[in-house]
Amino acid sequence: MSDIFNEDISVVHIRIFLKMIPHMILLLLDDGFTLVGKEVAIELKNDVVLTGTLHSVDQYLNVKLTDVQVVNKEQYPQLVPLRNCFIRGSVVRYIQIAPGDVDTELLQDATRKENAPPSSKNKT
Image 1 (cartoon, one colour):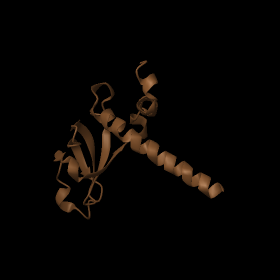
Image 2: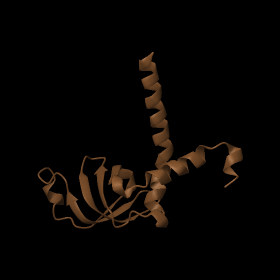
Image 3: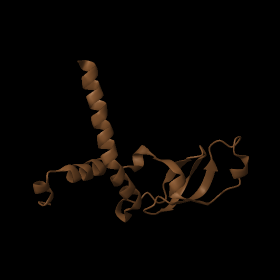
């Protein structure tokens, strides 16, 4: 019985995480909670990982980075001289943000509001 319970918990956590994704994207885009100027790591679908300072991001997750560094310099020596870059959102696999740069309470509140019953959504 405990295995079923643990499985249910993980499904719930996955659903909560999936519900939070739009709010995380808004966190990247929203001027009030901007991550512009923060250090991020971006893993591309071709397994290249770049780190740099977030310069801008749009609603398609197109990203501009400055002070770019390649994580695996030996495997991708042609990218070592790269300092600034534009990354098309469709080639992004992951964007990693430092935990200290993310306001988890803000994300949780936004998710709660979105998942609230219709009657309580109108009370805000």
